[in-house]
Length: 514
Ligand SMILES: *Cc1c(COP(=O)(O)O)cnc(C)c1O
Image (cartoon, rainbow, N blue to C red; front, side, top):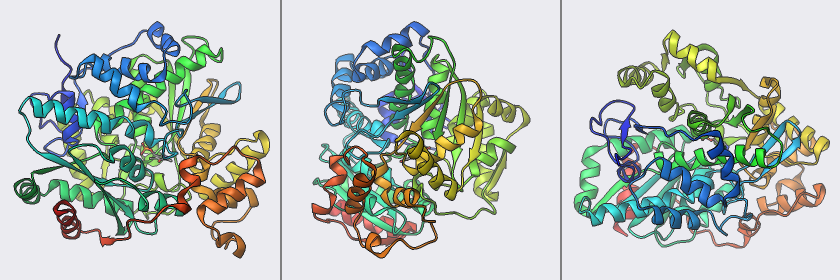
């Protein structure tokens, strides 16, 4: 059997590496992103038949189709562990239908109540297994520090996934003051012996840029290896091991909709995704490539609409763009790293073109794709951006009309889907439980504008107390246990650091010395 190997989007990996190495390395040596040489295809029958399997086995089937270099039994065991009773429903990610043609894919039933769990209950287990596998082959003899930049949800999900994994430490950086009270407490109270959390003065892009600089600092990486026998790796959505688990749920939800009689087998389903780093929607693209009858991919942006403008013009331009804080902070992103993979695919895997555009982006803060690539992009994608006021209005309207409570990220996607949809039914990716963003939801339900103050009695509440209030007022289902108990937990991490390379490297060294 020829093994599926991984090449990179900037052409620096001439001989592909196996899955285990792509997962461990995260980013390719030249700064490119790993992609598999072959994308497997599933027949319609194979896709539809996934519905008869438990979710963990659907995931295992997809992984095996990608022909990863771990034994089948191990893949089965890791998946059973990743998608088990750590989720609050046996369906793992159920699809709820608001009407005949509007389906909500609930991706937030994992331990941290955000869709990042779908990937980050899976990746750390495969990471640890891959490291063990490579150690046994004598390819590595060191341990790992996972360094994560987060706009809120990734950090907690990564901490939860990597906590107490052997041979791995994890450090998370989030924008200080740029995450919700609930998100902050989720991270600051993180348990586990191998974890660290830092607030960073700046926004998410500062965190991400800082992390990238540390990854790119060879002298620092050498020093960490010499002094501590530790290599840096990434659990950000640029890691292929983050992306692959996300492909599973698009195949799986198609199968479930057919099994529930809501789709004819083969009927096209459009997919709308609230997009930040372009990982989640890219997974839908790969599911389509694998054979899922997915029609259009709707890319929903908030007021940080760089992707919407790109999809509508072919120009990716952040040279004159203000970073806007919105009620959907996990989409407050200007540099959408995973877009690079999409462009690689659309150009017929032209690493030279990608390298050029990424250099343009670095130098001029903009790039423009060629006509052909743009035309292909337009065939696959449509995009719109939803402003913050409309986002809150959507939460209120959908609740009043259907009794279903959307979180602000999902609301952005829901509204974009209404604007972009045609005849096909639409699957809206729901990426967070509403209780992660209670303040925005409270404002939405009470018609309080974002710039206006909350009533004093309300602003005095903790995130947990506010959620209880919303729950009582709306009769919404119980707040997930992991969120409900946050006030009762001890804050372990309070450090705030600068976002420059030096400051992060000092913090990393101090943590590794512990
Ligand atoms: C991360 C995240 C997104 C954006 O997903 P990408 O894969 O980065 O595009 C959207 N909503 C929520 C709640 C998230 O946590």
